[in-house]
Image (tube, rainbow, N blue to C red; front, top):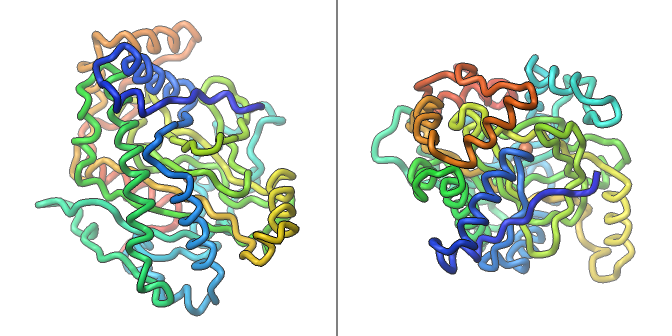
Length: 379
Ligand SMILES: [Fe+2]
């Protein structure tokens, strides 16, 4: 299916938050996340050049020998900083009946590639924390120093912070537009995420090793954070599924645009009004065509054959309490929420207020989700 995702313009909100145009963008943001679990974002403050520099750096980093990469592993903190090597992280679907039911409900032609399950993803990651340390917390493991890879010691932190702060600002802007669109105070989510354990989390897949059509780079899953944002990758391969269409959507980002996806924290916060978007990253004909173009272009032929995704996971603060009931009460007069609620009911569905635990801390939700994806070793 061609990419039907709405394009939302953050510059309109920055120009004047009270204008009718800004209000329309905010409503579009809420509707896109309800309908698709994703949207395309324009934000002139995020530079395409910064994304390109970031992709170059991460290609060079992941092209290092495995022994060098292993120096940056931190399994003792559940890989929540530093590097995660290939075949460590398992897509949650393998251990989740609800996820398997989602796949079973899809038309066979629209299903993800990883129906068998059980295998860990061949992707590598690097986690660089970008959150502020909370003054007090029930989740003290969050206090961790970032890892600086030895070969990049002089410039690593500056490079990570340059790209990370640009997309962090962009995703915080989206959280504000979403709040306005849902009829909440503009700062509702940005305040709830002030001490979030935000992560700049680029992923890497070795295309020289895994660049075969049909190879699964990241199996069918949802993200455990609040909102995920990515810059454009040099290699296509991301598919997403919208909650209502049941169609696999091939994501095509226009130049200079970013992709934003809803995660589990947003789903829980809104009592399921917005659902975390399922997605997968696979090797398609288009991935291989892009690889061939880079191999034959003299400007890029010497570069590592590695697919990088410049991903950032924006979290709510771990000590924030999730209350779907409070969300329902605070949005009783929200036009968008009530209209969407009616639509879900007319379509024969229901908005099940009780499916999501009341009073759970965000940090607890994250720990539960990490257990599913094999990154949280119980001690
Ligand atoms: Fe993901």
